[in-house]
Image 1 (cartoon, rainbow, N blue to C red):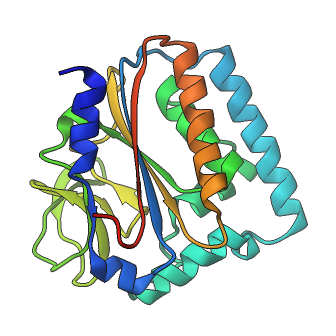
Image 2: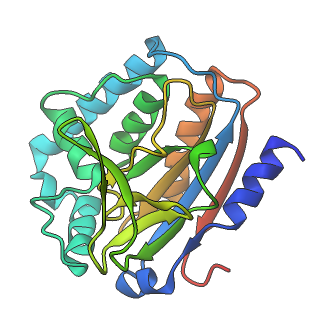
Length: 242
């Protein structure tokens, strides 16, 4: 079985529970599994993309408050729908936009820098995960509260739990990302040596499917520039997807 076939098989098992679509019927997830990434520190291309994303964020937020950016506002409403105050716990898009426009985006490694920049440029929450660290395919569910979440507090490893009803990404071993796209866990986070990754693009109205796919294409284009043999598989999950 080729790497692309393995990735497709993994993505075929991904699910978004009906309870999540019941909360936001406009939600769509575009999952991207890539294999053959060449790990590296940031380079000229990733730095140029980060600088472009920072400039885009400064321009955008000079014209309107961040909470009025349409896709940010949609995610704030989604957070309120499951009991989270969005001004206290920000979705990943809002958090990155604020940082990009003020202090600048972090410089981590080429892989992380690229997907952070794409998130800001295309105004879409994006999660990046180390694919081999997954135990079974990803699922987006409303938590029972008993699930485990491997995180850190003050630099120390801690096992936490989501709140009942919270929207979480998880696999067979526990929660991989809390509050839809608020905070990723330690167990499946990207590593400096990651060669196979899962990217999760989260969309709500008014973001169109065309805009969502354009964001994915740009990320793949940048990843492929340093890894010509990159194997890519995608899956678009919408209400009614089997």
